[in-house]
Length: 207
Image (cartoon, rainbow, N blue to C red; front, side, top):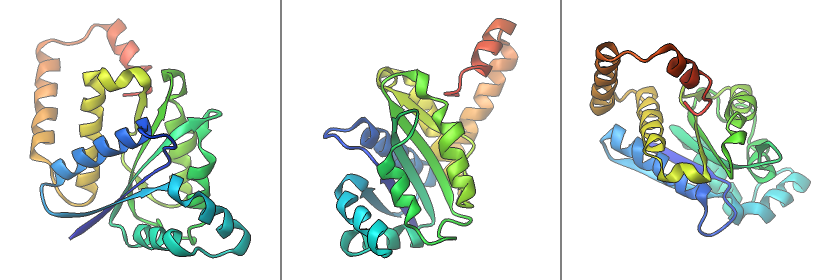
């Protein structure tokens, strides 16, 4: 059975970061279309143990369990809130305490949340380089959600595209996603976008 682990660094309850993580995991499960062993790691609950790990050099208790779940995962979904134009310290600390090579070759879907769309480039200048350094395989579509995006149907489109890409990296072709891509191409051929619209879309870091 495929082991999918979701790691998020949301701090509040309810949390927009957890909400995005839930949407990404639901889209991935839909694309996989088969039984999945799903584990959610809430880093807020591990904050004290992460600090202890930095001092002692080894994880204990629930943190040790979370690290083991990540080590055994076939794929990860990771989502962080944006603090000071980058991932949160809590998020970074968790991946700092992993043993070198833990994520080598592991498919990873990355996401981030923030109050405004001005932080959307965090996906490319912070998250993608971090997981490239850890030698993970990051899916092409990274998903950013500002506060206003949760009511936008375009967010759901990006979420499902990212989930289908993660499923594809796990060796599962997503027929619905393939059909959507084909339909989208046919629609573009039938009604091509004007040049100004193409430039606007190309400059939108949220995809």
